[in-house]
Length: 533
Image 1 (spheres, rainbow, N blue to C red):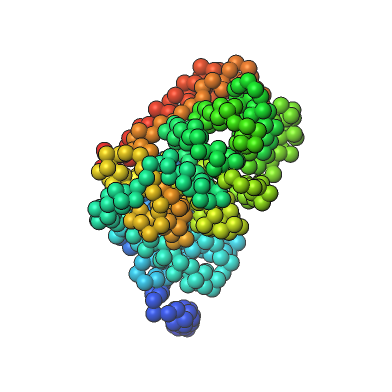
Image 2 (image 1 turned 60 degrees about the vertical axis):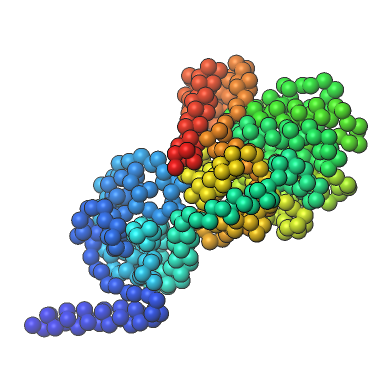
């Protein structure tokens, strides 16, 4: 009887302490004690409550069912969980996951929650977060804390921020209904893209052209702009997202009286680890060379590289003879900061003509938490002097995956209703600009991503997404260059180049691989096009 009473008072003391803790939360929070192990629940896919969603996640981790992670996780995780394959889980890890004791659940405004469990034998605590998205509770990440009190405080401070993101996810799922406003805006304010870009170059210190690499239609457009007789009057410098290590070869290419394409092949062949086969860039540089041939020395257009001299961006590989030589080039330099400083130094000493900066579309974002080059340039000069343009694209990530059309297709619908004619326009205070930014899959759910007009000033539509084409420079891959790639693979201690075993690497094999990538890219674009909506 004594032991029963003792156990009762111990239990009463624990529950009293927990209730005191729960009382410290505001009325927006609900504290729910659980005190059950994961394996005491059934192994099912149940996303009907915060607790069942967390248990579902634990069972899927324990079983190595990675292919299901995307279906039971927040939209924020979609880009890095897509196409995951199931993997075996060792018995110790499996037991560790299923034997975790779920102590309590803290719910905030019935929309986000944190679940506290033990983590490992070191006495740390795990927080599993879950969100209510589109009527389902889904996994949204984890945290590790040294004790349960720290876990509670972490949950209390973090859940309000998480709720902001959940609300944005819900807003992103809603499609604008006033389609006429978008169409009318195009009719009233739309311009010819080349006219629009030339006007921007005339009115701003620097125009940032945010492009998607390898896009034929984009590079064809830029070639057309460069050929315009007004271009050299407005632009003195073209900045490129290329390693500054290539500047001597670029200077030599543009100073040669005779066209020397081999210099460009050398530059593209030294780009990154295994080359950069963007035919559009190659042809664009040749076009600039041709334009320069007709200009006086004071009128000629300079082409300047801005990116870091690192192996993953571009180095002179002929100077790399050992693995130690290669490791010296791995410096982890902040690329956006480096590009900003390179451009800033040029612009500060510049007279008269303006500047065009051709860079990947993500770097052209003016509003970003990680200070993209466009953000840094806007802060240094002024938002008015720095004009950033994005070229139409589907929702995508940095790995070539497509997730749908911008704002659930309303942009594409408006362009289609105008017969898909090329058009450009200012985003500020427009139906397009006021829309929540969702182009970048990896950050679209962040409240800080704001709207389209917060990130870009201008918008250019050239073709529907399904007509976009990868434009590849197969000429880059000669027998001599294949031998060089094998040498680099040896220095990097890798057995594959572009997914091809080094021993099997030939011009034919890499050409087949590139053509397959081009075909797959076309199929992915068609899958998300307006025609399939």
